[in-house]
Amino acid sequence: MKTIIIGIYYQILSFLRVKKAFFFAFLFPTFIYTVFSLVWGGENEDYLKFLLTGVIVLTTASDALFSIGGVIANFYRTGLIRFFRVTPYSYTKHIIALICSRIVIVFFSTSIVLLVAYILNGTIMSWHEILYFVAGLILCIYIYAFIALIVSRITNEDSGNSGVMNFVFYGTVFLSNTIYPITELNPSFKIIVLFNPITPALDLSRGNFLLYQSVIWIILLWIAQYVCFNIQLKRK
View: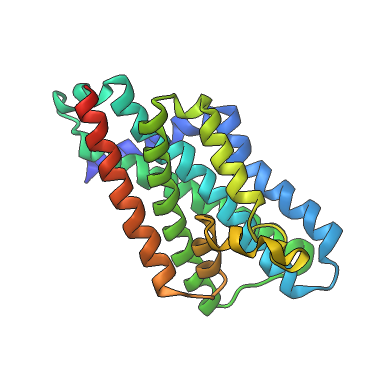
């Protein structure tokens, strides 16, 4: 346990030293929430909570895609996985420390956005809403971490410089009900939003829980990752 805690500490330090990661984890979500709440928020409390959950899910998706799934995929792509298998600090402990460190970062990032939302608009979430919210973030981490593994194994590219990975992230975010209710603005987007991987996490975080929707994505992504992993092994 002590080894994992130390690992979490150094993983957080390593993350915070990357200026780009620090910006997108802490400054970017606060900026997005502030701008959109000032432009479209007004006295509309429903939209302010809609925006609040969307911004935090967006940030969580980015962390899961680039800082969890992408990092794990790079271990396999670069062969670093072989190094962990022969060191006293096991691969399993390293992955646990990596995931836990990102969860801690998501927690602090979420806390900052919630604080900003309270200061700007007096927005407060009930305990009932917070429980759905946490469940949605957990589902978001699972979905986007697996997407990163799948994309990295198909393209065999560095996750940080992968055009496909960036396309997946920005495509799923802007063609969804993350920041604005796109389906209300244009009903023709309903099909796209329905099959968007970020939709189950958004719906769950907003209390619109559809069990079959979440289960389908969990199973499909696990199967796809398993298939891609075996195809990659055969290539080697």
